[in-house]
Length: 268
Image 1 (cartoon, one colour):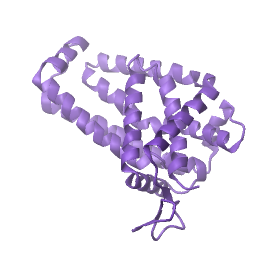
Image 2: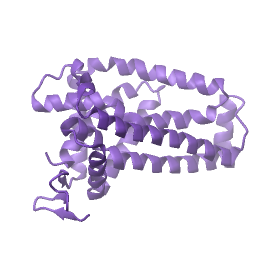
Image 3: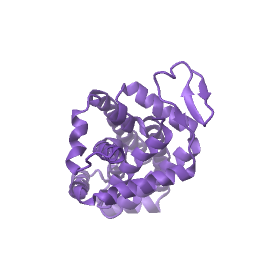
């Protein structure tokens, strides 16, 4: 399938230009502008994110209890980072609120759940299942990488595990290889979903068309999209440091910003 660039920098699909939206060329400034608009959307109605303030500390606590109870501290980091792969699903209601604000409609918090009545919900679930499969694949891969370096040995306790991780060559190898492979998973999620969920919320269509459009958007704008990916990773790391509590702010901002990035890169 060939790509057609029109006069204003948009990129359209050659034999399906009538079915798939055109893709605009964007710059780094468009990415930062989307982030700024996401912050604006968040600060407009920050009070309705209280549920995230409750959800993520509880989630972090459950993860900690589960891994420590099963002497599986080695999976704590993969599980915590793996949940970031599911971030686009968590943000579905945020896309709807940003869409409503942009259209001049009522953007009260309750309307975040309107997405559950969307005709596109079955297609949204298909893409969601794709992310769930990637999450499971990441955990299996992380466990396999751990086995390659540490065999069947399990950490005696958290501090023993941290000592092995940061003071031994095999711990350094695990960190290096694990993060490199995790980066691959993150890039796959970025390429397939960066605009897929907002597009389905906005205009419906099929899961394949949404994923295909997302891939086209990344192919047309590799540097800005990679820049966006770096912003997402950095923000998630900062948000996760205080026992995941910071994600109560980081995730809503990124969710709203993703909507505005979609608007910047996908032709209306």
